[in-house]
Image (tube, rainbow, N blue to C red; front, side, top):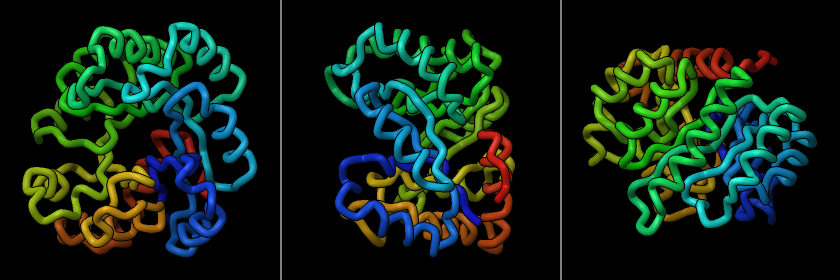
Length: 255
């Protein structure tokens, strides 16, 4: 069994064939998925999807790339939503210093508000940190103790070590399958496996064999196999370890 620790299965891109996408994932052994929200407008759709389908677990949050859609009132609503719905995590939240014209101070307001919620509800946090790993770590230190995952990690080995010292896991997906991603592949080979999660970020970040295509959770097996080869491990061993990590972090019940 595999856990896709980061899948946006609620995205509109899957509306035409979501049932088939789910069937392919389950046939590939991806039996559980963590599905994080990106904006308040999508919380209802996400809740309905996860309630209707076994093996889908919601997280609710406000993604930094959707900053124009967020208002401070959404943080108040998010507290009420988390208290009522009891998700497995807070997120997707974080900081993005790559996309132009995303106000850093306003991003921090929403990120720090969600870190407070994660702390108050004792939930893990799913963090987006693009060109912002140091700033994310500084915020985690201010609002900790916290636990969670830095998804689609693209930082250095030293940053990864400091993150897992803070109680955070490292999420790796499609980018690790690209041969030119030398630093990321070295990290995948050397990272202590107890801090590793597998993800697809579907419909985004496809593996190298599906460049430019819509990604989907069934392709988590390619991520698993790539990391297994880089580490000199059997794919089943990587699956077993990363599934246990996801179960521990998100409080999943083994099925």
